Length: 155
Image 1 (cartoon, rainbow, N blue to C red):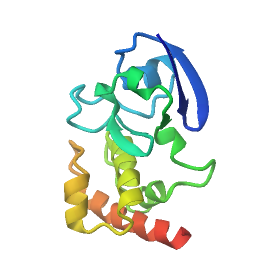
Image 2 (image 1 turned 45 degrees about the vertical axis):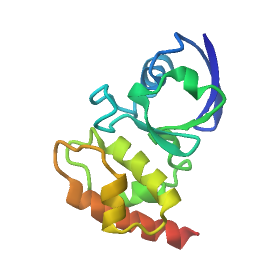
Image 3 (image 1 turned 90 degrees about the horizontal axis):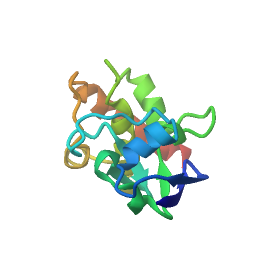
Image 4 (image 1 turned 30 degrees about the horizontal axis):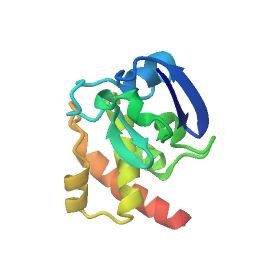
């Protein structure tokens, strides 16, 4: 099946089985490796991307549902050389340990900040439910608050 969608603001057309998870289309067909495979069950969040601005676990999102939509991956989060406030905050707070899950966390955080510009710790706990095997949650929480500050300063 041919599926058309925007990926990081560029029109793409893929010819794949319509039930192929979006994750594998992004990684294997379109050769964008920033989005990671974690569990394959939509539990860990390593594969989080934005579909029309919503955080979605792409490992369980069939590509047929991407038709006509705008998809953003970690590669599309920054604006050229200018880091997104979430990426800048992650860098400032030295969040990653192994770093494998971090693209998913950053995408989930960017979606959160679009909905809740000044999240409380409770908002973070309710909305950022990805899993980090290295346990960098404390640094991520600091980075999420810092990202909110940076985003609000830029507005």
